[in-house]
Length: 589
Image (cartoon, one colour):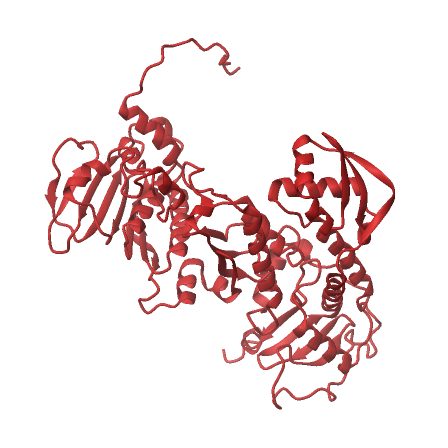
């Protein structure tokens, strides 16, 4: 039986000041979690120094050796020892500077923290043509030694955690540690597109991202970091609201993933994790993602430095916005508008992205629909296509022209790229759904007074939020009266949701307001109802359509927002290009 430890009895000890080495090791425990943390801090220093080219060399996942070299402004001989001292930095001069930071680092803790848990060497030169100066991390009291070095800085970190074996044993296999380092480098490369990044692991160059301006376009840079699939299956967007600007690339709903591993959010060039941003972007994808799929995106937010607090996390991975509701609104609206403006033909929508969705989600495959009896005994009911225009004649729409109907479920169409296959029920469902939403938005939210007002008990903080957000609640179609410190009375709810549970609805809306500063709960509930109505009203499987009706459906799809997915996030159409068809039949092989 394992020995039990009693932590309840702690002997009282005299209070004393910790020595500098122990203080640095404690700080390292907050800042330096693993080799990737070292790379992050060093590369951020390089970027703050104005580097245009950064090279990272890693050995044994960073356990044995890490080297970061840049061509930045460098550190003078007289400042090398100061750079290895705690809370010494060139980025802050007064307390007010914390609220107008434009640099990635600012605390002056990284280098001394690294030096306390590794064998660190700092080499730097400030002028091209002159020799540089080198200083060992454990010899800061000694004079720097002359050493050949071009303009810029090199930091070498060897034997990480050699003097803290308890920390070292928590490191993973070299391949795992390299994976974390590569993730950090991708984030930094995405935040600074004009800077060239190179990285190698055990002598093999595994990352090379030339900066924009070196004959490389933004799209090519994106491909170098995230791969060609993301570049082909994403669309650029931009939105400005007052002093806020949000822009970037968002993946198509069909290019979604089973894990949130391609989601990058940058605030003023800094990669952060932020609940407000994640909720806003997820909300924008609300009715176009299937099940628990995760969207892919690279989103940049530019905000005045005084409107964001970055000094809230030891590793600077989290931020706090002064106006989080405004940030949520611009992100959600900008991404949703971008998704809504994508039309067939704008970006890729080929069979490969559809195959990925189905392979990763077997449950996404719909159960077979009842099929009409085949008229020719062959099992496939096809119609003559003589009424439809020729693809070679004149301008061809993105979804082409209908040629046939398959099993009363799918429409086969032809465009200049190849063959289009459309799920007619799913497509018509989305078209009907978007029209119902437009009609609802045009009329505004109508209230339905409750015949018998309902009482609801909430916490004091939630009641305080209700009192502050009365105007917003009214705009959502909810009317409430506060009747006590922890109680309120519900008098009216949105007319579309008159059959819903008023207490549950108000409770969820208030929870959203407390957490995110706003709520889309009412709209989401209304959308669920409209989606159900659209599903029942859409054309059913088995109905035989004329070619004219099929072409009308195709034209409506081209004009409808989010027509690439049904209300449940499943694809409505897929393209099989001529090249894909040729490969399928091995033509030319």
